[in-house]
Amino acid sequence: MDLEILYPINTQLPSPRANSIQVVNTCHALCRSGITVHLLARREGSLDQAAVLDYYGLPPDDRLHLHFLPTALPGNPRVFNLTYQASMLRRLAALLRPGVRQCLFTRDLLCASTALRLRRVLKLPVVFELHALNHWTNPLFTNTKGSAIRLARLKGRERYVYRSASAVVAISEGCRAALVKTFDVTTPIDVIHDGTSLFIDPQSKPDSGYARLLYVGQFYPWKGVETAVRAMANLPGLSLDLYGGDYFTAAADIARLKGCAAEVGAGESVLFRGYVPPGRIRDIMAQQYIGILPAADNIMGRHFISPLKLFEYMGCSIPVVASDLPPIREIITHGRNGLLFAPGDPADLARQLRRLVDDPTLTRSLVLTAYQDAKGYSYDRRAERLRATLDRVVPR
Image (tube, rainbow, N blue to C red; front, side):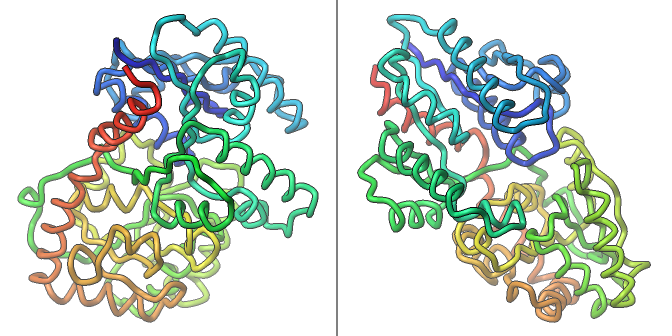
């Protein structure tokens, strides 16, 4: 008997946020592997299943079932989250089928905690996918120190989930190490990196002519995009295309980066191209670019980042220059499948970019190796690894 996954995600679909891209692609790949997936999203702001799949560039699959759950209108976050949890529990109860191999899989900490506290009723194994320790990263995302009470509550919820789950999937060795160091966890932990569904054969691209630089992603201050903008002061003759936006603070972040570009005299070479839905990003990646991943040296960069754009650059035969940070070094080896630069150092970033522009032989070698490596990080390979974890948790 095959497996059914119940996957709650407390967000609307589609969404420009990277977490939705990762979740939808992971669930679709699990369906392609033969697993039935029930994806439980918020109803408010969502489109129908066909429109959602089109947004992410994915074909229909009879094994994928999107459920759009009612929630209170946004306002009080606590009420909003509680109403999603209530809707989630009602839908889980309706989806339970005695005698069928079922498992709850999620990256949402509150959803996992709710399901675990009611596991005697639901009788569902819970597998949690760890992307960061929330009590570490919450001050970074909220741009505040965070109250001691709130951080303690987050840490307590995390401790409960990590110790109670049937298994934890960490998206990097850095994630796993932070979890083990912080909590006394005996739960099985599998490291399964993120992936890509985008592949463009390097033979379809020319060997030289790299005068355009690319960044795809959001422009939050903690992302480090300012380093890429400042590097343009040392790269005359090159241009930087920035693709991103369509989120609440995007206008302010773009204004900040435009000011930075003007400050260093690079206003005409830094071009803001707007937001492109994930289902259309392959057209961008097919162009002749050098990809930049300028992650900042902060709590996320040192321990938790797993940028989807890194795997997309590699799979689309785009040479990549990335920040020299531990999670990045799990994927990129300097001089083998990409180049690394000192985080936050525009001059070093410019030097590494200039190496690729000036040395087509080196660039071609990096592209060919990265493309082969990316095949090991496809979403289908990710689904294979996840399936091994899930089959262990819910044996046949």
